Length: 104
Image (cartoon, rainbow, N blue to C red; front, side, top):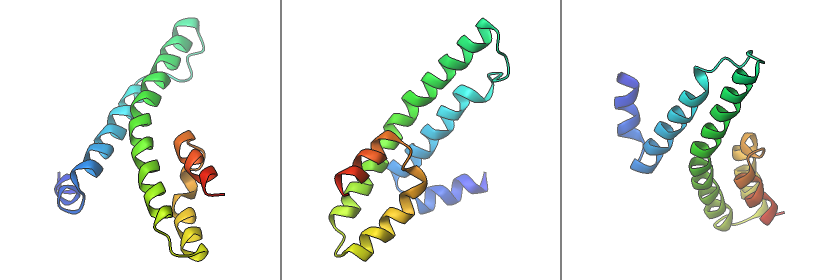
């Protein structure tokens, strides 16, 4: 598609791989009926979530590394706050939260 062509031109190899990994992680849960509360349905949902978390873990670790590098090269507190605000929506993720805690 056109979007994939644009992504390939604007993003580096690691970023493209991370995006594909997020799509694959989502594939783990998108076909599972999250409203099925039967034993089988609950087991399927929990297995899907586990698969999702395993795939997302790699992406999250990479983002945490980028965050750590950016914070390490920040020249002042204002720049650090700008970096924190950019990554703020990801603070709920364990790897990201760990990096934020390092810089408190």
